Image 1 (cartoon, rainbow over the protein chains, first blue to last red):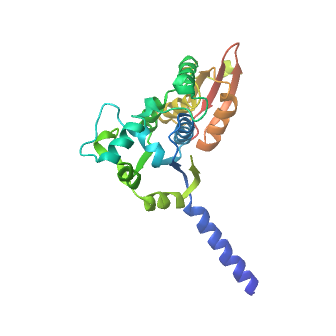
Image 2 (cartoon, rainbow over the protein chains, first blue to last red):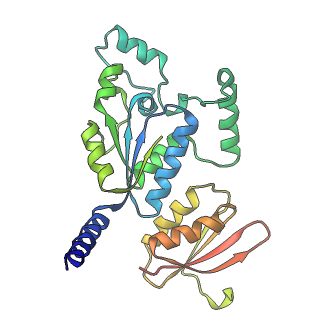
Image 3 (spheres, rainbow over the protein chains, first blue to last red):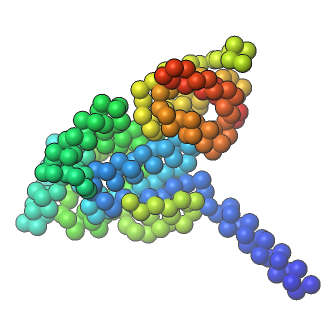
Length: 179
Length: 80
């Protein structure tokens, strides 16, 4: 009788656990490497095409990939200027994690991608936003590295958030990734 | 078998690489009515695994596959 009750309550809890997780992908994008960013966006857009809800959280080295090369941040201190100078100015400027060879390897890969009609990183970002992928940007990384909102690409629903926002999304997602 | 299935929409996805074929098909199928047939022609070798996986996840059905010399035709029925 006690065992039956335990089984019933366990079944109920299992059912609740199953219901709480949505057909959703929550991804931390940490890397600023071209290869890893491409992988992140291929997975994100693929998931969106499979009717999953997709949220991406850009933090640390991944943040420069969302800079707009044509825009400038105002009122930066010395460290902010240094980070701004040292890190890539947007998706077109990020480099491979391996075989970069002072930019030659990255150039070669981009050439091959064009030849084989693989979308470039900035095309992938635009596609992701178009098909409803939600992109959040880590506020703390932004201020740590001295990046300003006005130097980032602008898109509908752009938000600067903290870790709690990611965790809230991750908690009800079937898939969580860290790239 | 293909001559018995009448496509409602035909898409030329030749040359497109992963993940674009799946994205384009998903966008198109949303505009269609339940029961209609979408035919997608692709040169992406990954499509043979990916279209069935996409169909299973989104609840649609691949009713026929036709292999041509350099491309493949996928007949997709909108189920829901």
